[in-house]
Length: 323
Image (cartoon, rainbow, N blue to C red; front, side, top):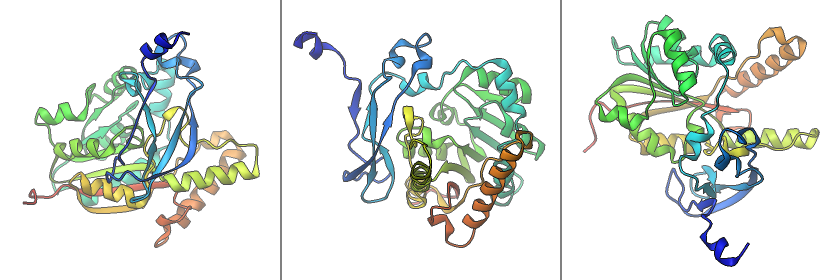
């Protein structure tokens, strides 16, 4: 390839200079994440072209948040990555699956305690196939969802009868929509510039309304991966194919919510997924380990230890905007 052709070829990545949570520019690189999009060879050739590339993750020296050092320059990269063409049967199985029900029920119980009395309008951001919408309906909530994957959005709407918006939070806020509870379960880790997203969600919350955010705990997940790699043939994977771009610690998650305008922030250990017992003895052993670690990680102060593999945050939009 000639030097001129090389200069004319658009770059695959652009650098990220500031911490998405606190704005600091001092970072330490700690893990090189691989990209493999072989499954998109026929669906999206431009996305597939990133296969074989890698991206460094870096941790902010000020707040402990971790993010990629570079981001793909391909327009709508993340929208394209999450536009999987799942089969109808697989989406239906996700609606019926119970592996996240412990997480969902834990969130619903806490929302009952925190949401403004008498207000029961809930928005599920990243509604997927609609399982949480369904459980929230059963608990007495009037529900709506946001889901950018057209297949899962359509299925969730059909199974629950709820409105599932195929648009982003900023557009909903501009329309004047307001909710007494907003839920993001295993969603915020996928979205670059998370404080910007949380600010858009704050605009969707009623004064006094609450938000529930569940994400993996970045430092704990990395520790787990390193232990597994040291003991087995497991290869460390915390962000392959940039499936996770945000790696929160308890402190940085609280700071992100604070900078988005929320208050009364509580960071807890998040509940784990529980495998179906139809998986046999291996599933039972795995569940026993997961639930045992979860119980230990709920002890006072344990959310700041490697036992807290998941983080669950709750916060409230102020009744009045501070002057």
